[in-house]
Amino acid sequence: MKPLTPHPSLLTKTARRAVFLDRDGTINVEKDYLYKIEDFEFIPGVPEAIKKLKEAGFLVIVVTNQSGVARGFYSLEDVEVLHRHIQDELAKIGTSIDAFYVCPHHPTEGFGEFRRKCNCRKGKPGMLLEAAREHEIDLVASFMVGDKIADIEAGKAAGCAQILVLTGYGHIEIDRMELQKVQIADTLAHAAARIVEKEKVNG
Image (cartoon, rainbow, N blue to C red; front, side, top):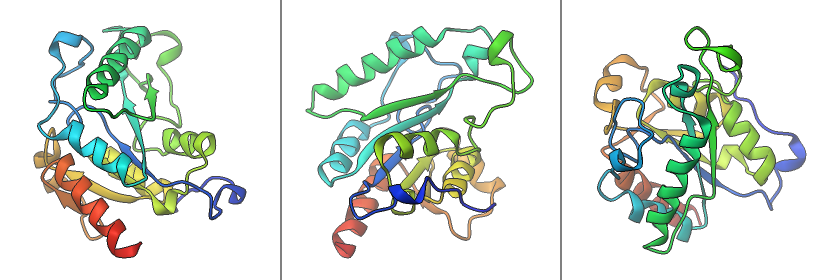
């Protein structure tokens, strides 16, 4: 798949770098169709990893498929409530997510306006491209970190480097995908350490 990038005017020396993060299985323990605050649980080391990435100068942006909205399991407002909770928890160690992008659609399951084909559902790169436009991000200098093939495909299509973490579904997905140019990390904490170390070397 040919990488897609934002308008050339964004790819300047002032364009920012980002680490795009999948949510379920990468940031938090995988629980099918998670939306309740009481069910949310950070994977160990994740808050500190996010803080490390921010301190290294990266934007940290969550891009998450939430087909539970299309299926009627919960609402977009429920998703926003959970994301506010995540921000509150991260604030306790002096950090935060810079932006959340949510795809509520599914092409074949669910009801109403959310049951449709879209360009935002990973593995398509729509959420990453939208974030790049809105935050002036250089995608080629950025990373996509997730636990599913769809995360890797979205990152590749957007032109980002890709890292598969072995939390969530990662330990299953690794056996189903082409890995020549995909980096592997045990957890987001390990991925963040690698990204920051690479930044030091290149910087």
